Image (tube, rainbow, N blue to C red):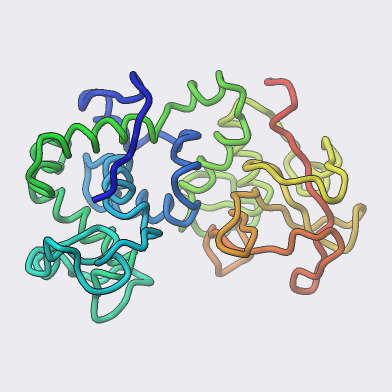
Length: 308
């Protein structure tokens, strides 16, 4: 188990976590884990009503730095206590909670597969007190029988999420927009769609995400690009920046929201086209580079626009 050092006062009590399923990722969360890991935790926690994703993410951070640790037992084998994988399961416990295999997981399920392990951990917590937020302390204690561990996880969890109001107040409207858009992953593409849980097209997703952040954008991709402010080519992207594709600056046909980097790739969340749900996907970060039959036209930073 890894030790995570927290600043005094950074945590929050269990009571403040009970609504954590609707919280968005804080700057601390983005610093500690990749966008892909964050999304995996959020989706896995969603299988257990009442389990804040922040608690699941805190466990993954404490146990293995979200799968990046090179300590024994994380990538292969077991540690001195016999625990395996990024969520550090005892083999018998993992076997109890490894089904069903989540979409994209290893089959047969493996404790070393991050997605399999995240979903198994959510089931473990759910069975031991997290369901409907009944007793998060008990659920975390059942995961690792240590009062100090419970305190560490709950404290860290309190620093991983924040309300949209807190994020807007901190001046990070782009963070609100990208986190809201990530929560729509899996929503169907619908031409002209702009409704959560029903469907989005590319610019409808962008407009709805920034509306949540308090900024009104035009409805279609070309107008969103023209609304700017446009970033000079080569400007480092920030989460929430809008990235545009098409035939050129006067022929913009698609827009996504920059999320961050995953390995060597830059990724965005977007509503691609009919038949493909809202998703996170890579794109070329160099202006003029090919993206399918289009090119990457450029980016804007609407987060600096005044609230409306």
